[in-house]
Each structure stands twice: as C-alpha cells, then as structure tokens.
Image (cartoon, rainbow, N blue to C red; front, side):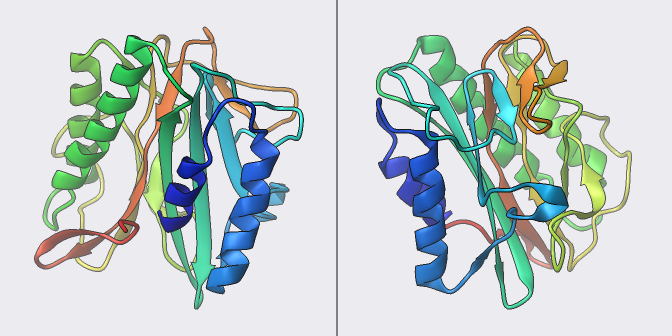
Length: 229
C-alpha cells in the first residue's frame, strides 16, 4: 500500500497513466522489491491502471491521460523474499460525481465487511456474502467474472474468494492462509467485456467500476491486514 499511497498523491488531471508505471518501478527499486505483475501470464507492465468503466487490468499508456471527474484504480503487487503482496485502491481525479464518490466508498466498505468475516472456522462464502450484501444494499453490483484469491509464494493460489455467494458455503478458512480479498464493483451491470488489447476488463454497459484490495493473513487472533501501511 505504501506504493499505492505514493501513486495516489500524484493523481490529478493531465497526468498520463504511463507516469504511474514509471513511478511504481522507481519505488520498487528503492525498496528492493520486485513488481509481481510484470511478466505474469504475459502481462507486460508492473502496474494495472484502470479508469472509469475499466474494472481491472488496465494497461499504462503515454496517451492515456487522467481528466477531471475520472476515477482511477491502481492494482499492484510486489515480491519480497519470495513472497507476494497484492493490493488495490480507487481514487477520484479532482472533483468527481456524487455517484462516483458513493461507489468508491461502498466498495472500500465492502472490502472491510469481507475482512471482518475472514476468521478461521468460517467459510469463504461468509466473506463473499458480506461483500455482496453490502454492495447490493446500495444498488450496485459485484463483478462476478473476477475473484479474490489466496496469495503467498505465487500471485494466485487457492482458494478463490468470490465477491458473491452464500454464507456457510465454500472452503473452510484456516489459520495460516493469506487471502487477497478484492471487491470489484460496478455502478451498473455486473457483466464484463475484455478489450482488444486482451487484458483490459470493462463493464459491458460502460458503467463506472471501483476496486479495493488487501492481502489478509488468517491468524488465531483473527484477520491481520498485511498490506496496510
């Protein structure tokens, strides 16, 4: 999250998404960590930068410029001493609409609702249900095509952590697990389309989307957020 908060400080109209990629790489080098996304399944960049209707996997570009009123999501992972950390946040560019503000607030709240259920003895479905029910209470929808996941020596490990589901269902949550819990929320339809670049996932109806994520360790004393600064 330290890198994400530094990127957040640079969010303003007129900045290209490529500048965030360059800054993320500089920050990785300074801290002696490796970017986890670069090269993963062929993804060419260190950072995912997704604007407005883009949900996840937006690719940094020199000609992709932030505008007043946009919302932008940063998704970033690092590798340190063989272990992966993964986190995401969404931030407004200048003054954004009331709906965009509400979407971001509800998505971040849903993340913490999910984390509250990440106790050993619970089921993954308890996390999923907490996220979905909070999001839908405000008239938004959880994205179903992409899910949270286990994280450790690899970026994506079992179990999957969907943002929808029923309480008491799915794999049991065990002490020692580390889960990347990451609600992705649409202001409209939950259906997804992948752009021609083969990576960028957008809402099918082009409604706004927000994304927040933490890596969370399951301890005997409850969930511990590893990616919190």
